[in-house]
Image (cartoon, rainbow, N blue to C red; front, side):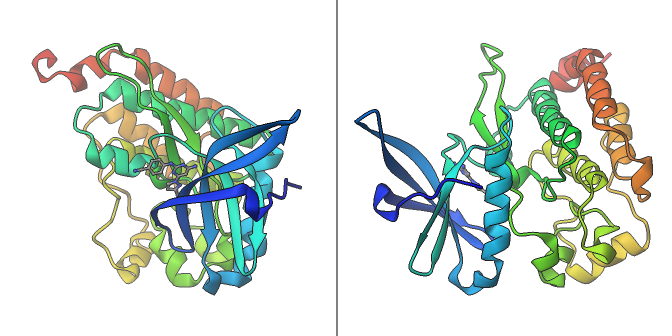
Length: 286
Ligand SMILES: N#Cc1ccc(Nc2nc(N)cc(-n3ccc(CO)n3)n2)cc1
């Protein structure tokens, strides 16, 4: 399943924030390899004590991530259990969550965003080929390992984080709050299928091209539920071809959503389409 890490091998540094069920800290882990002590910087994700009933799902998420390896999937070193604390020990990803990075950054180019989108599509394609649904695709769960440098056109590098607690265990209010990332059919089934990740991909694309602004952020849970009941769509982006890809992914009928291969093909044509210039520098508008 996964590696158990001794609590005494962990060092705790500062808190880096709080999720809905977890608290994250910077830290380090030491381990002996061929007689040499190594210290590795890690991210310590602690399951809140008052969500103890979720620990199996918490561990299941960790176990999923440690059983498959891909360059765009977060590396989970293992689990540590100490007294009542359940801790997931993850690789420390240098620049943290993408949503916060996009909100803070001003000069993120269209080609930078398309590059990130394509990396996420590749991670999803890898999961699709293994018939594994992630279930929690959103910009908050995309971690930025490398910023990429606009001047040297060095490209960014992202890692998809663990899926977190399974939908079935979340309260209805938490599921409603995940609108519009959670696919509409999940509200009835609470089951996560591959098609759900396509819907979430569309919502995450919208986030990335709206500089980390959360879609429907102003709506309360009731109005979020009505958004689905009325078969509403997110406001279309100016870039029509990109808006089309988002609406293909966010179709209410799961079987009509595109395959990952199709998503990657369409992203590739957007990358080569030259539109990136037009949307990048205002002086280039033809
Ligand atoms: N300032 C700052 C700063 C904060 C975090 C990191 N690094 C990191 N590494 C991970 N493995 C996971 C995460 N996460 C952050 C939110 C979530 C959601 O679950 N994960 N952040 C780097 C810089």
